[in-house]
Length: 143
Image (cartoon, rainbow, N blue to C red; front, side):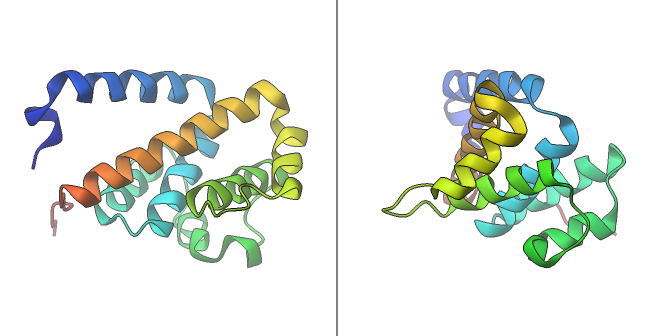
């Protein structure tokens, strides 16, 4: 199903929230959030799209591949690690919610308002992942 064609008004509403989130979060951090959540959710459409976007904006293949094992990897600074920790905690949200240490690290790096924006970006990519997986969207096969 092409969600944008079947429910264009809902699709535009989601795009509006996405646009706001993108305007509030540093693009390097935003790309890492989108790729990591998409990996965790196993959304091939979004992994493909967001790695291509990240590469176009100057992200390195080493850092993108490193997202599969980011906790063990030396490629990310403390700010990026805080965003990735929150991404994992929210994407894999369990009964206990986000661990205090993860939340505190995010607030320490981004402040309360910045953490709210990062949280919105994480929520948005998780929504996109679910929409693309549920509607069986696949990336285009290229060369």
